[in-house]
Image (tube, rainbow, N blue to C red; front, side, top):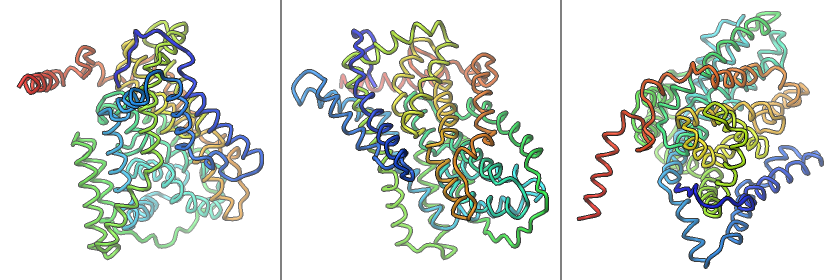
Length: 473
Protein backbone atom coordinates (compact mmCIF):
# COMPACT_ATOMS: atom_id res chain seq x y z
CA UNK A 1 0.00 0.00 0.00
CA UNK A 2 1.14 3.53 -0.68
CA UNK A 3 1.54 4.91 2.82
CA UNK A 4 2.17 8.64 3.20
CA UNK A 5 4.48 8.73 6.21
CA UNK A 6 5.23 12.45 6.03
CA UNK A 7 1.54 13.29 6.35
CA UNK A 8 0.76 14.99 9.67
CA UNK A 9 -0.01 12.43 12.35
CA UNK A 10 -3.54 12.13 13.67
CA UNK A 11 -4.28 9.68 16.48
CA UNK A 12 -8.04 9.89 15.90
CA UNK A 13 -7.53 8.28 12.51
CA UNK A 14 -6.93 4.98 14.34
CA UNK A 15 -10.46 5.00 15.77
CA UNK A 16 -11.75 2.52 13.13
CA UNK A 17 -9.24 -0.09 14.36
CA UNK A 18 -10.33 0.61 17.93
CA UNK A 19 -13.99 0.22 16.90
CA UNK A 20 -13.19 -3.19 15.41
CA UNK A 21 -11.36 -4.36 18.54
CA UNK A 22 -14.04 -3.05 20.93
CA UNK A 23 -16.89 -4.69 19.01
CA UNK A 24 -15.12 -7.99 18.40
CA UNK A 25 -13.47 -8.34 21.80
CA UNK A 26 -16.40 -6.81 23.70
CA UNK A 27 -18.93 -9.19 22.15
CA UNK A 28 -16.70 -12.12 23.00
CA UNK A 29 -16.24 -11.08 26.62
CA UNK A 30 -19.97 -10.50 27.12
CA UNK A 31 -20.92 -13.87 25.60
CA UNK A 32 -18.18 -15.66 27.52
CA UNK A 33 -19.54 -14.22 30.77
CA UNK A 34 -22.93 -15.65 29.78
CA UNK A 35 -21.39 -19.09 29.33
CA UNK A 36 -21.78 -19.23 25.54
CA UNK A 37 -19.51 -21.80 23.84
CA UNK A 38 -16.90 -20.43 21.43
CA UNK A 39 -17.91 -16.97 22.65
CA UNK A 40 -15.27 -15.09 20.68
CA UNK A 41 -16.50 -16.58 17.42
CA UNK A 42 -20.20 -15.73 17.69
CA UNK A 43 -19.94 -12.15 16.41
CA UNK A 44 -18.48 -12.44 12.88
CA UNK A 45 -15.15 -10.67 12.51
CA UNK A 46 -16.15 -9.52 9.01
CA UNK A 47 -19.23 -7.77 10.38
CA UNK A 48 -17.12 -6.03 13.02
CA UNK A 49 -14.66 -4.97 10.31
CA UNK A 50 -17.52 -3.72 8.10
CA UNK A 51 -18.77 -1.49 10.93
CA UNK A 52 -15.21 -0.21 11.49
CA UNK A 53 -14.94 0.48 7.75
CA UNK A 54 -18.11 2.58 7.85
CA UNK A 55 -16.54 4.60 10.67
CA UNK A 56 -13.43 5.12 8.52
CA UNK A 57 -15.62 6.35 5.65
CA UNK A 58 -17.41 8.76 7.99
CA UNK A 59 -14.09 10.14 9.31
CA UNK A 60 -12.50 10.70 5.89
CA UNK A 61 -13.01 14.05 4.24
CA UNK A 62 -14.15 14.42 0.64
CA UNK A 63 -17.03 13.26 -1.52
CA UNK A 64 -18.29 9.67 -1.36
CA UNK A 65 -16.51 8.94 -4.64
CA UNK A 66 -13.23 10.39 -3.35
CA UNK A 67 -13.47 8.33 -0.16
CA UNK A 68 -14.25 5.19 -2.13
CA UNK A 69 -11.23 5.83 -4.37
CA UNK A 70 -9.02 5.87 -1.27
CA UNK A 71 -10.61 2.64 -0.07
CA UNK A 72 -10.22 1.02 -3.50
CA UNK A 73 -6.56 2.01 -3.64
CA UNK A 74 -5.92 -0.14 -0.58
CA UNK A 75 -8.39 -2.94 -1.32
CA UNK A 76 -7.19 -3.33 -4.92
CA UNK A 77 -3.51 -3.16 -4.02
CA UNK A 78 -1.51 -5.89 -5.76
CA UNK A 79 -0.40 -7.41 -2.44
CA UNK A 80 -3.99 -7.63 -1.20
CA UNK A 81 -5.28 -9.16 -4.45
CA UNK A 82 -2.41 -11.65 -4.49
CA UNK A 83 -3.20 -12.60 -0.91
CA UNK A 84 -6.86 -13.12 -1.78
CA UNK A 85 -6.06 -15.41 -4.71
CA UNK A 86 -3.69 -17.50 -2.58
CA UNK A 87 -6.36 -17.83 0.10
CA UNK A 88 -8.79 -19.23 -2.45
CA UNK A 89 -6.31 -21.70 -3.92
CA UNK A 90 -5.14 -22.83 -0.47
CA UNK A 91 -8.75 -23.38 0.57
CA UNK A 92 -9.46 -25.43 -2.54
CA UNK A 93 -6.36 -27.60 -2.04
CA UNK A 94 -7.20 -28.23 1.60
CA UNK A 95 -10.80 -29.09 0.72
CA UNK A 96 -9.96 -31.54 -2.07
CA UNK A 97 -7.05 -33.18 -0.22
CA UNK A 98 -9.16 -33.64 2.90
CA UNK A 99 -12.14 -35.01 0.99
CA UNK A 100 -10.07 -37.69 -0.75
CA UNK A 101 -8.78 -38.96 2.62
CA UNK A 102 -5.36 -37.33 2.68
CA UNK A 103 -5.73 -35.95 6.19
CA UNK A 104 -6.60 -39.31 7.78
CA UNK A 105 -3.88 -41.06 5.77
CA UNK A 106 -1.30 -38.59 7.04
CA UNK A 107 -2.28 -39.13 10.68
CA UNK A 108 -2.26 -42.93 10.39
CA UNK A 109 1.06 -42.92 8.53
CA UNK A 110 2.61 -40.85 11.30
CA UNK A 111 1.24 -43.05 14.08
CA UNK A 112 2.50 -46.18 12.35
CA UNK A 113 6.04 -44.76 12.30
CA UNK A 114 6.20 -43.59 15.95
CA UNK A 115 7.28 -46.07 18.68
CA UNK A 116 4.53 -46.27 21.32
CA UNK A 117 6.91 -45.34 24.16
CA UNK A 118 7.40 -41.95 22.49
CA UNK A 119 3.72 -41.19 21.93
CA UNK A 120 3.60 -37.64 23.33
CA UNK A 121 6.60 -36.54 21.26
CA UNK A 122 5.18 -38.54 18.35
CA UNK A 123 1.83 -36.75 18.50
CA UNK A 124 3.70 -33.43 18.45
CA UNK A 125 5.71 -34.50 15.37
CA UNK A 126 2.63 -35.84 13.56
CA UNK A 127 0.70 -32.65 14.27
CA UNK A 128 3.67 -30.53 13.19
CA UNK A 129 3.97 -32.35 9.87
CA UNK A 130 0.25 -32.35 9.25
CA UNK A 131 -0.08 -28.67 10.12
CA UNK A 132 2.83 -27.81 7.80
CA UNK A 133 1.44 -29.92 4.97
CA UNK A 134 -2.19 -28.78 5.24
CA UNK A 135 -1.68 -25.20 6.43
CA UNK A 136 -4.40 -25.44 9.07
CA UNK A 137 -3.97 -25.73 12.81
CA UNK A 138 -7.72 -26.19 13.28
CA UNK A 139 -7.91 -29.08 10.82
CA UNK A 140 -4.91 -30.69 12.47
CA UNK A 141 -6.40 -30.36 15.95
CA UNK A 142 -9.72 -31.74 14.76
CA UNK A 143 -8.03 -34.79 13.21
CA UNK A 144 -5.38 -35.59 15.83
CA UNK A 145 -6.87 -34.63 19.24
CA UNK A 146 -9.44 -37.49 19.28
CA UNK A 147 -6.62 -39.97 18.58
CA UNK A 148 -4.33 -38.32 21.14
CA UNK A 149 -7.03 -38.49 23.85
CA UNK A 150 -7.62 -42.18 23.20
CA UNK A 151 -3.90 -42.97 23.31
CA UNK A 152 -3.42 -40.98 26.52
CA UNK A 153 -6.29 -42.83 28.16
CA UNK A 154 -4.91 -46.25 27.11
CA UNK A 155 -1.29 -45.48 28.00
CA UNK A 156 -1.78 -43.68 31.29
CA UNK A 157 -0.30 -40.46 29.91
CA UNK A 158 -1.55 -37.09 31.18
CA UNK A 159 -4.37 -36.08 28.84
CA UNK A 160 -3.50 -32.36 29.03
CA UNK A 161 0.08 -33.17 28.00
CA UNK A 162 -1.08 -35.17 24.97
CA UNK A 163 -3.63 -32.57 23.91
CA UNK A 164 -1.07 -29.78 24.38
CA UNK A 165 1.43 -31.76 22.28
CA UNK A 166 -1.14 -31.86 19.49
CA UNK A 167 -1.95 -28.14 19.76
CA UNK A 168 1.75 -27.22 19.90
CA UNK A 169 2.52 -29.28 16.81
CA UNK A 170 -0.45 -27.77 15.00
CA UNK A 171 0.79 -24.25 15.79
CA UNK A 172 4.28 -25.19 14.57
CA UNK A 173 2.76 -26.27 11.25
CA UNK A 174 0.48 -23.26 10.99
CA UNK A 175 3.47 -21.00 11.61
CA UNK A 176 5.73 -22.59 8.95
CA UNK A 177 3.33 -23.87 6.30
CA UNK A 178 3.60 -22.31 2.87
CA UNK A 179 -0.17 -22.45 2.45
CA UNK A 180 -1.36 -21.24 5.85
CA UNK A 181 -3.34 -18.01 6.12
CA UNK A 182 -0.73 -16.55 8.46
CA UNK A 183 2.21 -17.17 6.13
CA UNK A 184 0.29 -15.72 3.20
CA UNK A 185 -0.75 -12.63 5.18
CA UNK A 186 2.71 -12.08 6.70
CA UNK A 187 4.68 -12.37 3.46
CA UNK A 188 2.30 -10.45 1.24
CA UNK A 189 1.92 -7.61 3.74
CA UNK A 190 5.72 -7.23 3.87
CA UNK A 191 6.38 -7.85 0.17
CA UNK A 192 8.77 -10.77 0.56
CA UNK A 193 8.93 -14.30 -0.81
CA UNK A 194 7.39 -17.17 1.17
CA UNK A 195 10.49 -19.34 0.88
CA UNK A 196 12.69 -16.55 2.30
CA UNK A 197 10.36 -16.00 5.24
CA UNK A 198 10.39 -19.79 5.76
CA UNK A 199 14.20 -19.81 5.93
CA UNK A 200 14.20 -17.19 8.67
CA UNK A 201 11.20 -18.63 10.49
CA UNK A 202 12.53 -22.20 10.34
CA UNK A 203 15.62 -21.38 12.39
CA UNK A 204 13.40 -19.92 15.11
CA UNK A 205 10.76 -22.66 15.09
CA UNK A 206 13.16 -25.62 14.75
CA UNK A 207 15.12 -25.05 18.01
CA UNK A 208 11.83 -24.54 19.86
CA UNK A 209 10.44 -27.77 18.36
CA UNK A 210 13.56 -29.79 19.20
CA UNK A 211 13.54 -28.60 22.81
CA UNK A 212 9.82 -29.40 23.00
CA UNK A 213 10.42 -32.94 21.73
CA UNK A 214 13.10 -33.50 24.40
CA UNK A 215 10.74 -32.23 27.11
CA UNK A 216 7.91 -34.46 25.87
CA UNK A 217 10.21 -37.49 25.77
CA UNK A 218 10.84 -36.91 29.46
CA UNK A 219 7.39 -35.91 30.76
CA UNK A 220 5.22 -37.80 28.25
CA UNK A 221 6.29 -41.43 28.60
CA UNK A 222 3.29 -43.78 28.95
CA UNK A 223 2.79 -45.86 32.11
CA UNK A 224 1.67 -48.81 29.95
CA UNK A 225 2.22 -49.42 26.25
CA UNK A 226 -1.10 -48.86 24.45
CA UNK A 227 -2.18 -51.12 21.59
CA UNK A 228 -2.66 -49.02 18.47
CA UNK A 229 -4.24 -51.78 16.42
CA UNK A 230 -4.15 -51.79 12.63
CA UNK A 231 -3.58 -48.32 11.17
CA UNK A 232 -4.76 -48.35 7.59
CA UNK A 233 -3.53 -45.72 5.17
CA UNK A 234 -2.70 -45.30 1.52
CA UNK A 235 0.62 -43.54 0.96
CA UNK A 236 -0.57 -42.23 -2.39
CA UNK A 237 -3.04 -40.03 -0.50
CA UNK A 238 -0.18 -38.37 1.37
CA UNK A 239 1.66 -37.54 -1.88
CA UNK A 240 -0.25 -34.28 -2.69
CA UNK A 241 0.72 -32.81 0.70
CA UNK A 242 4.36 -33.81 0.20
CA UNK A 243 4.34 -32.42 -3.35
CA UNK A 244 3.00 -29.03 -2.26
CA UNK A 245 5.47 -28.84 0.61
CA UNK A 246 8.49 -29.75 -1.52
CA UNK A 247 7.57 -27.62 -4.55
CA UNK A 248 6.97 -24.58 -2.33
CA UNK A 249 10.32 -25.08 -0.57
CA UNK A 250 12.26 -25.27 -3.84
CA UNK A 251 10.82 -21.90 -4.85
CA UNK A 252 8.13 -22.71 -7.43
CA UNK A 253 5.54 -19.95 -7.85
CA UNK A 254 2.91 -20.37 -5.13
CA UNK A 255 -0.01 -20.05 -7.58
CA UNK A 256 1.41 -22.89 -9.66
CA UNK A 257 2.20 -24.99 -6.56
CA UNK A 258 -1.34 -24.76 -5.21
CA UNK A 259 -2.98 -25.29 -8.60
CA UNK A 260 -0.86 -28.42 -9.18
CA UNK A 261 -1.73 -29.54 -5.63
CA UNK A 262 -5.46 -29.18 -6.28
CA UNK A 263 -5.39 -31.27 -9.45
CA UNK A 264 -2.95 -33.84 -8.03
CA UNK A 265 -5.21 -34.34 -4.99
CA UNK A 266 -8.22 -34.58 -7.29
CA UNK A 267 -6.48 -37.12 -9.54
CA UNK A 268 -5.53 -39.25 -6.52
CA UNK A 269 -9.08 -39.06 -5.19
CA UNK A 270 -10.61 -40.09 -8.53
CA UNK A 271 -8.03 -42.86 -9.06
CA UNK A 272 -8.67 -44.34 -5.61
CA UNK A 273 -12.45 -43.99 -5.83
CA UNK A 274 -12.63 -41.46 -2.99
CA UNK A 275 -13.96 -38.77 -5.33
CA UNK A 276 -15.72 -38.54 -8.65
CA UNK A 277 -15.42 -35.61 -11.02
CA UNK A 278 -18.47 -33.89 -9.51
CA UNK A 279 -17.19 -34.38 -5.96
CA UNK A 280 -13.86 -32.94 -7.07
CA UNK A 281 -15.55 -29.86 -8.49
CA UNK A 282 -17.79 -29.45 -5.44
CA UNK A 283 -14.82 -29.64 -3.05
CA UNK A 284 -12.93 -26.98 -5.01
CA UNK A 285 -15.97 -24.73 -4.62
CA UNK A 286 -16.43 -25.55 -0.93
CA UNK A 287 -12.73 -24.83 -0.44
CA UNK A 288 -13.20 -21.41 -2.04
CA UNK A 289 -16.24 -20.59 0.07
CA UNK A 290 -14.52 -21.89 3.20
CA UNK A 291 -12.15 -18.93 2.90
CA UNK A 292 -14.99 -16.38 2.85
CA UNK A 293 -14.22 -14.92 6.27
CA UNK A 294 -10.52 -14.28 5.77
CA UNK A 295 -11.17 -13.17 2.15
CA UNK A 296 -13.63 -10.40 3.06
CA UNK A 297 -11.73 -9.50 6.21
CA UNK A 298 -8.53 -8.92 4.21
CA UNK A 299 -10.39 -6.99 1.50
CA UNK A 300 -12.07 -4.66 4.00
CA UNK A 301 -8.94 -4.29 6.13
CA UNK A 302 -6.78 -3.44 3.11
CA UNK A 303 -9.10 -0.61 2.11
CA UNK A 304 -9.59 0.62 5.69
CA UNK A 305 -5.83 0.63 6.32
CA UNK A 306 -5.38 2.90 3.31
CA UNK A 307 -8.03 5.29 4.68
CA UNK A 308 -6.43 5.27 8.13
CA UNK A 309 -3.06 5.99 6.53
CA UNK A 310 -4.53 8.78 4.40
CA UNK A 311 -5.94 10.36 7.56
CA UNK A 312 -2.55 10.25 9.31
CA UNK A 313 -3.14 7.35 11.68
CA UNK A 314 -0.06 5.29 10.79
CA UNK A 315 2.20 8.33 10.96
CA UNK A 316 0.85 9.14 14.44
CA UNK A 317 1.35 5.59 15.65
CA UNK A 318 4.93 5.41 14.44
CA UNK A 319 5.68 8.79 15.99
CA UNK A 320 4.48 7.44 19.35
CA UNK A 321 6.30 4.14 18.96
CA UNK A 322 9.53 6.02 18.28
CA UNK A 323 9.70 6.80 22.00
CA UNK A 324 10.31 3.10 22.70
CA UNK A 325 12.13 2.31 19.45
CA UNK A 326 15.72 3.45 19.54
CA UNK A 327 16.98 1.27 16.72
CA UNK A 328 16.61 -1.91 14.73
CA UNK A 329 16.31 -4.34 17.65
CA UNK A 330 13.84 -2.30 19.68
CA UNK A 331 11.81 -1.86 16.48
CA UNK A 332 11.64 -5.65 16.20
CA UNK A 333 10.40 -5.82 19.80
CA UNK A 334 7.79 -3.22 18.87
CA UNK A 335 6.60 -5.27 15.88
CA UNK A 336 6.37 -8.41 18.04
CA UNK A 337 4.42 -6.48 20.68
CA UNK A 338 2.11 -4.95 18.09
CA UNK A 339 1.01 -8.28 16.59
CA UNK A 340 0.79 -9.92 20.02
CA UNK A 341 -1.62 -7.26 21.26
CA UNK A 342 -3.62 -7.53 18.04
CA UNK A 343 -3.95 -11.29 18.55
CA UNK A 344 -5.03 -10.88 22.17
CA UNK A 345 -7.69 -8.45 20.97
CA UNK A 346 -8.97 -10.50 18.03
CA UNK A 347 -8.26 -14.12 19.09
CA UNK A 348 -7.31 -14.84 15.48
CA UNK A 349 -3.69 -14.89 14.34
CA UNK A 350 -4.52 -14.25 10.67
CA UNK A 351 -6.67 -11.25 11.59
CA UNK A 352 -3.90 -10.00 13.89
CA UNK A 353 -1.36 -10.10 11.05
CA UNK A 354 -3.75 -8.46 8.59
CA UNK A 355 -4.48 -5.69 11.10
CA UNK A 356 -0.87 -5.01 12.06
CA UNK A 357 0.83 -5.82 8.74
CA UNK A 358 0.76 -2.35 7.20
CA UNK A 359 1.94 -0.71 10.43
CA UNK A 360 4.71 -3.28 10.76
CA UNK A 361 5.81 -2.58 7.19
CA UNK A 362 6.13 1.12 7.93
CA UNK A 363 8.11 0.42 11.10
CA UNK A 364 10.27 -2.01 9.15
CA UNK A 365 11.14 0.60 6.57
CA UNK A 366 11.66 3.32 9.17
CA UNK A 367 14.16 1.26 11.17
CA UNK A 368 15.50 -0.91 8.33
CA UNK A 369 14.23 -4.21 9.71
CA UNK A 370 14.54 -6.74 6.90
CA UNK A 371 10.99 -7.50 5.62
CA UNK A 372 11.74 -11.25 5.74
CA UNK A 373 12.55 -10.79 9.40
CA UNK A 374 9.41 -8.71 9.96
CA UNK A 375 7.20 -11.33 8.29
CA UNK A 376 8.75 -13.99 10.52
CA UNK A 377 8.17 -11.92 13.68
CA UNK A 378 4.52 -11.34 12.73
CA UNK A 379 3.93 -15.05 12.18
CA UNK A 380 5.92 -16.29 15.20
CA UNK A 381 4.40 -14.02 17.82
CA UNK A 382 0.84 -14.23 16.52
CA UNK A 383 1.31 -18.01 16.69
CA UNK A 384 2.60 -17.84 20.27
CA UNK A 385 -0.32 -15.77 21.51
CA UNK A 386 -2.94 -17.67 19.50
CA UNK A 387 -1.70 -20.88 21.06
CA UNK A 388 -1.89 -19.73 24.69
CA UNK A 389 -4.91 -17.44 24.90
CA UNK A 390 -7.69 -19.48 26.58
CA UNK A 391 -10.39 -17.98 24.34
CA UNK A 392 -8.67 -18.84 21.05
CA UNK A 393 -10.34 -21.29 18.67
CA UNK A 394 -7.47 -23.78 18.91
CA UNK A 395 -7.67 -24.31 22.68
CA UNK A 396 -11.46 -24.09 22.77
CA UNK A 397 -11.74 -26.76 20.07
CA UNK A 398 -9.13 -29.01 21.70
CA UNK A 399 -10.89 -28.76 25.06
CA UNK A 400 -14.32 -29.37 23.52
CA UNK A 401 -13.10 -32.46 21.63
CA UNK A 402 -11.52 -33.84 24.80
CA UNK A 403 -14.66 -33.22 26.84
CA UNK A 404 -16.75 -34.99 24.19
CA UNK A 405 -14.87 -38.17 25.11
CA UNK A 406 -16.05 -37.90 28.72
CA UNK A 407 -12.84 -36.30 30.04
CA UNK A 408 -13.50 -32.89 31.60
CA UNK A 409 -11.07 -30.37 30.15
CA UNK A 410 -10.83 -26.60 29.97
CA UNK A 411 -8.36 -24.49 27.97
CA UNK A 412 -6.63 -23.45 31.19
CA UNK A 413 -5.76 -27.12 31.81
CA UNK A 414 -3.91 -27.25 28.50
CA UNK A 415 -2.01 -23.93 28.68
CA UNK A 416 0.66 -24.94 31.28
CA UNK A 417 1.58 -27.94 29.12
CA UNK A 418 1.92 -26.00 25.87
CA UNK A 419 5.67 -26.33 25.91
CA UNK A 420 6.13 -25.45 22.26
CA UNK A 421 4.40 -22.05 22.41
CA UNK A 422 6.20 -21.00 25.59
CA UNK A 423 9.58 -22.11 24.26
CA UNK A 424 8.89 -20.48 20.87
CA UNK A 425 8.29 -17.15 22.64
CA UNK A 426 11.67 -17.39 24.39
CA UNK A 427 13.52 -18.43 21.22
CA UNK A 428 11.75 -15.70 19.22
CA UNK A 429 12.81 -12.98 21.66
CA UNK A 430 16.35 -14.39 21.80
CA UNK A 431 16.56 -14.29 17.98
CA UNK A 432 16.08 -10.52 18.08
CA UNK A 433 19.17 -9.95 20.20
CA UNK A 434 21.22 -12.91 18.89
CA UNK A 435 20.49 -13.00 15.14
CA UNK A 436 21.05 -16.73 14.69
CA UNK A 437 18.09 -17.03 12.29
CA UNK A 438 19.10 -14.23 9.92
CA UNK A 439 21.44 -16.15 7.62
CA UNK A 440 19.38 -15.52 4.48
CA UNK A 441 19.14 -11.80 5.35
CA UNK A 442 22.92 -11.51 5.68
CA UNK A 443 23.65 -13.59 2.58
CA UNK A 444 21.17 -11.70 0.39
CA UNK A 445 20.60 -8.27 2.02
CA UNK A 446 17.50 -6.20 1.39
CA UNK A 447 17.80 -3.36 -1.12
CA UNK A 448 15.67 -0.56 0.30
CA UNK A 449 15.81 1.53 -2.88
CA UNK A 450 14.10 -1.15 -4.97
CA UNK A 451 12.35 -2.85 -2.03
CA UNK A 452 13.60 -6.34 -2.93
CA UNK A 453 16.49 -8.57 -1.92
CA UNK A 454 19.75 -7.79 -3.73
CA UNK A 455 19.35 -10.95 -5.81
CA UNK A 456 16.11 -9.54 -7.21
CA UNK A 457 17.32 -6.02 -8.06
CA UNK A 458 18.17 -6.80 -11.71
CA UNK A 459 14.75 -8.31 -12.32
CA UNK A 460 13.04 -5.37 -10.59
CA UNK A 461 14.99 -2.87 -12.71
CA UNK A 462 14.04 -4.75 -15.88
CA UNK A 463 10.38 -4.77 -14.84
CA UNK A 464 10.42 -1.03 -14.09
CA UNK A 465 12.09 -0.28 -17.42
CA UNK A 466 9.53 -2.39 -19.27
CA UNK A 467 6.69 -0.60 -17.50
CA UNK A 468 8.25 2.77 -18.33
CA UNK A 469 8.67 1.84 -21.99
CA UNK A 470 5.09 0.58 -22.14
CA UNK A 471 3.78 3.79 -20.59
CA UNK A 472 5.74 5.95 -23.04
CA UNK A 473 4.58 3.81 -25.96
